[in-house]
Length: 178
Image (cartoon, rainbow, N blue to C red; front, side, top):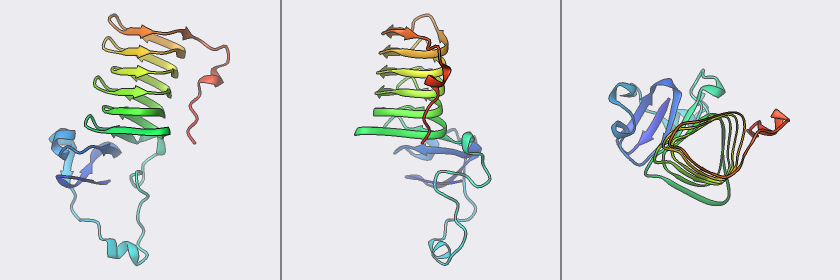
């Protein structure tokens, strides 16, 4: 999959999508990023050539996509809702809801809003509700809000200020990916 970053157009392995203002080599290790062989030709696309949809690598399954919100990125919006059918990794700051099959809040990641996913891992800060079938709060996690879960793992050192609840109906935890 081709990705435009300030360092140029790059090919990412594992179908990752990276949102960052840092150079590509700072965003990923050098072994994971390599320049693409052939640059994208807009003229070919305008003449009816088949162009893969943005955000989905050719031939990939929808749920295998990794989207990363970089640590230098802040996303703010009233009623904002970021949704992916794959994995969303938040390393920056989001003021709004994040929803995905798997949601990972990195150590420097901050979310103010609802974090919802089949699997939710929190290493950073969440001010709001965390909903997931499987929820993990690592030792560096700071959650100010309620946690709704089917399975919950809290490492020693994690900060949790809120209620913990296990709904009787697991369907209540299913993320809405639309």
